Image (cartoon, rainbow, N blue to C red; front, top):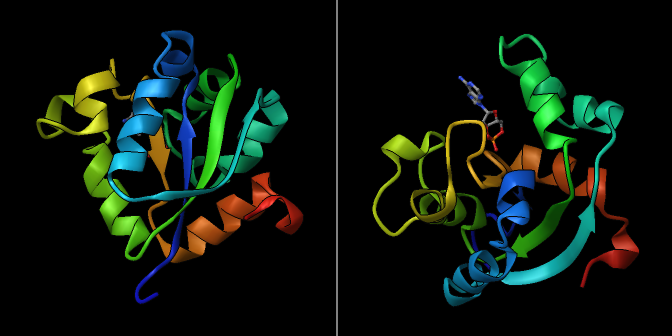
Length: 140
Ligand code: CMP
């Protein structure tokens, strides 16, 4: 496989709560991503702080940590050629008001914070984020 191979995705608490796990995973499958690992977890405040440490100087950090630990999430390692860019294209802009028609965020996001889904922004972060959630033995 050429190009980057994995991205880490999270279906966020509000999208899980609203029953969007199934429809979102269907879109991911149809776009040709293989689900190499998947689980449902509820982060503690401390775990969310650690996961989002790169944003710890941002004004929205505390709200982000609180929101991401507010309920269960679905975490996946997705595998595909050009996984990072193709997945970011599939999910759309961080702010759903700017997301293109047909993207996951356009369909299922409510706001910048409740933006339904996360995708890694680089190869380096895909590896760090995947290692945060999954042991090697739990990846297929
Ligand atoms: P994501 O890229 O998945 O991970 C970081 C999250 O921080 C991002 O999604 C948004 O949900 C959130 N975020 C980014 N910018 C802002 C902002 N200006 N205000 C509130 N939340 C933000």
